[in-house]
Length: 235
Image 1 (cartoon, rainbow, N blue to C red):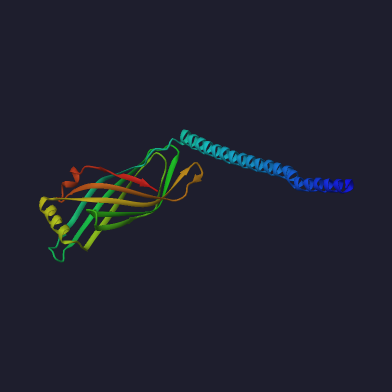
Image 2: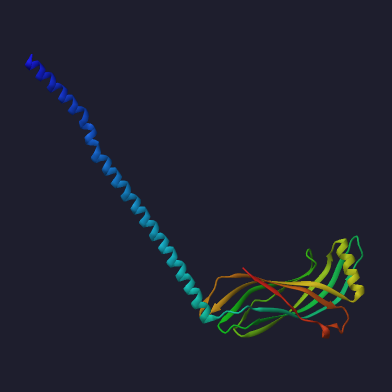
């Protein structure tokens, strides 16, 4: 009886020990996983902070480079102005098959006031527009270079030969012809490079919009022409 009781008690203690052992064994494993997760999170935070710091330093350095460039070069905008405009042989045929004939003589003056920036024009094109949609004439100008502190005059001859125009535009041109003057828009498109010291920039697209250019039709109107400044966009 006593031995049976001792054996029974021993069996119960062994089972209790067996049941509690896995629970106690899992505590170190759970603790290790918590430490590992905290360590991984800390590493990610550290990497993120490094990336943010690198980005801030890069932005500050880029701003410093731009500031130094501006202080050294002091770039100024290039001015474009239509300083002369004459039209000859201007006539409009009546609708419905309305056509325009004219020869436009234009002078566009480009002024580079910069002390250290020069320019190179790979190609230049001029358009004579009537309103937004009617192109009367197109002319190309030869490539050229413009030194710093230089004023260059581009003389252009743009010819309109039997250019078809819409009925409404033909009527308006007829009114201009009767009034003795015609108002057109002059647009210049160019492919340019800038040079500072011995370094050339990439190519840029330059556009100059000159509106409105009022041209008298009488032979003596050239003397009374008023210069028209142009709006310039570079991209």
